[in-house]
Length: 79
Image (cartoon, rainbow, N blue to C red; front, side):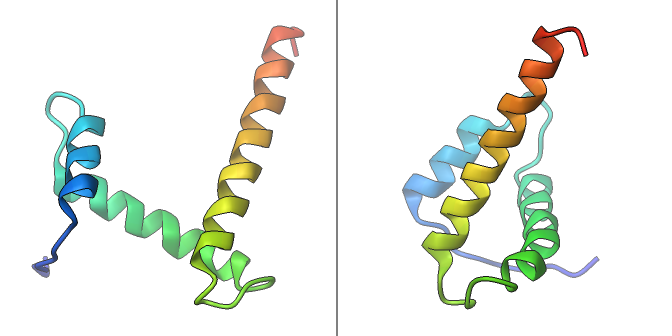
């Protein structure tokens, strides 16, 4: 497996550390984030330029929130 070194702002590192559960690995968390971005970026490329990072994040957060709310409504309605 390739080894990569990276620097994170202290605040981001602390956020990641807080998100980890017992037995979780920060490396695995970062690998998952990278895989997620690899899947989503080609879709976002259809409407945004690569430098439009904030717009990309806003769209992803909005779309995921909308879909999660829809699925929760389905569960609440017995579907």
